[in-house]
Image (cartoon, rainbow, N blue to C red):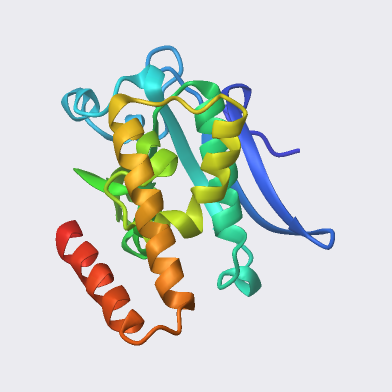
Length: 213
């Protein structure tokens, strides 16, 4: 059998298609003291102190998808499930270590670089960035393009909200309705045959891109 030292504190989420395993990811609920996070073994105590409180962190490791499914919605489904686990666990941040190739994936789902880096000698001095994403990204699209949030997290966010398990800050209560109204307007313009609808939609999208920058 295959085991890992943090198995007792971890969950492995898997994605299946017609009895074929097409994706998996490990999420760890270490405490940073008795049970260190994987990335913690490679960074200094001062860098670790710059990150969110350990009791608010879930570490993401071993993210992988079958090569034949990398252009499907498998990854989206996995992150929907991960967001659900985060919310129901009461923690607020995912933290991961990413090389420059995986970063292209993580960035699209709301992760940010922390500025903390380390190298793994046994992997030929592979340089990794420590990256993080706040629960607010999944909850209401904080610092994320609203249309991207709609694609990734809108459905699961509404589902958790209906179950009464989605924490809501004052900012959430203000921003969430605005984002949802914006999304409805864009979708309405996309479906509209009204003259000038495309121009209005593009102006709104361009304004959002400018604001995000």
